Length: 132
Image 1: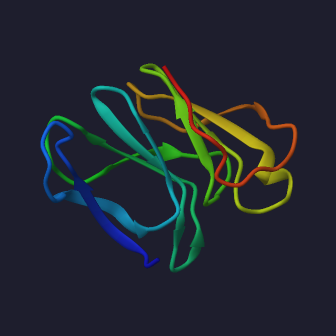
Image 2: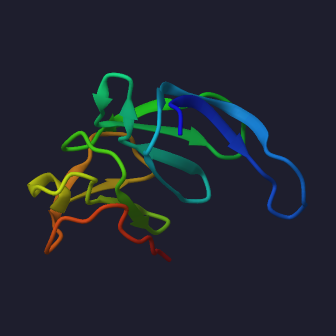
């Protein structure tokens, strides 16, 4: 899988191909994403320079490029995400170390850096997603 800055979208109510939404701030792969009804938020990933701690967002109702949201507490890729309409969580990473246990949280409606939420009991890669 290549590194790309492309954001595509589909209209779930109708069958069809994906359409260009805009671009990420940096070409990235293996990032985690979450949303509420207003914002789509993407965190971390890997670029040609290695793992990143960047968080970026788009406004779902209008197409356009991503904007800087803030930073994760640690750079990472291939990790899990979950959340609800208010709060988003980014957890685990592909590396089997203490950084693989990290849980960060953000408040989706406001930009800013992620805050430490706690730790998973063991390091996890691409952990499951749930939310309300």
